Length: 596
Ligand SMILES: Nc1ncnc2c1ncn2[C@@H]1O[C@H](COP(=O)(O)OP(=O)(O)O)[C@@H](O)[C@H]1O
Ligand SMILES: [Mg+2]
Image 1 (cartoon, helix red, strand yellow):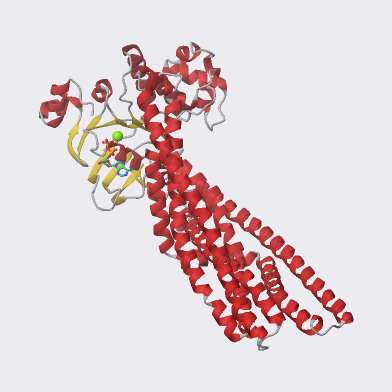
Image 2 (cartoon, helix red, strand yellow; image 1 turned 90 degrees about the vertical axis):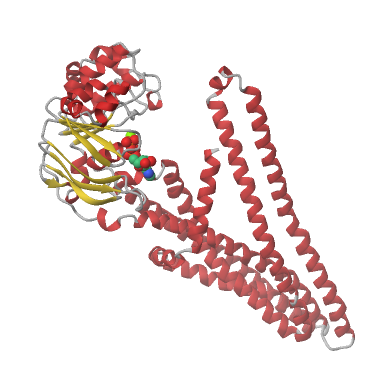
């Protein structure tokens, strides 16, 4: 179900972006187009020849009939045939030239855009990725660049079709004003019909698309968790639910198909009406000698050319809007923090580990504050434990200290060894800080690879660290020891084991500051003891900020800060806080723990 909601959200955001700053998209795509101006100019030139030659065909036929067929002149007929062949060659040649220059310029533009986007994403700060899912970014880099590169293609085709339409209108009127103007009355009728049709058809196609993604999402959930479903005996219920989704999709798809099929007959019908009018009125004009046969035939030919560019222009407009929306999404990323990223910041020197949290306030939405003027300071080598109810702001504060959440800070700063972190190069700071998240991120590779992760240390050094942490044996006892391959997200290991591996990964980097969101999930008491011992080793002589759930961790901490609605309501060590007999003591006594 989530997927549907997301699709809807995306649809909403598409709409919003369609209406907003199109100008800026055009302005930003221009440099890309300028680079390919030669190819694009060639395409435009070819398009001019292409549409003019197509629109000229009925005129030549009229000329041939009136001048040479009615008044037999064998020799000139050969001449006009040659002229006709020349026109046909120009038509085909210009088509080839146009397609060639359009497609190759589009590929070059696409290449450049994708490259720029990729380079840019590589340089974005970490918190950008917490706000944008990987899937979404992928679809931007691949899908949206693809969509945007059609912009030049559409624009040139649109110019060509508009020119063609103008050519046809002028020709029809110049052939015979009264017949021409009556026939041209069909233009507003077909235009209005096509616009209405397009609007409705787009809606129907969107419905078909969102129902099929609902089907896919449901299929995905049901197949990936089929064991749980069978265990809970929910098969029949789920089959019924799937049947409903499947039927919804069938209905939506059928409506969309019917809608698509309905345009053809209407266009044919209108063409028929126009032809009948031409024959009735034109025939009368010919019979009464007011018009030549050639003119009548040319008019009939123009009717058949007339509706094609109208239909194309309307679908170009829709495609143009889609391209613009994609362009806007691409430039949103490209414009993200341009000034900040490219500013060369200083390197943070090796830090000792004094942390100062000075007057930090934070808001995710610029309205409600999640942290209010928080002040804390940690001496190098000491541990600060953060406790408090869920939603009190612990994780947010930890991320701000780790320098992975900078946007949203409305006051104050974090200092490491007295230096404001915001003034330093992000990488030089994050490489000195180890963040151990609540559910450790393990990629599908061996345990060894997961510990080494992006460093160039030796196996021996890894053993040294794991022995020090007391987890060497545990790893050796895994199915293939250090070579055990972790399934994605490490599902083949217990949470406790994953936690231990993430400790080792943190320690091999020799970080000056450790920030940790303790896992709350149940861990058996044997692992619990092991984790505690490894944790003590990990933290000894290192500054750490720990969102603590385990009582033992909290009791050992040098300072405990009790957070509530983003305020620090109590601060002290375990003993002081119990003596103060405040919120901490209350939590401790009522639960036997202060776990949030
Ligand atoms: N990414 C986010 N976007 C918007 N609000 C958030 C986000 N993360 C957390 N919050 C909100 O901020 C508040 C503090 O959350 P958090 O720091 O995770 O608290 P804790 O870790 O103490 O449970 C909560 O009200 C939570 O709903
Ligand atoms: Mg949290």
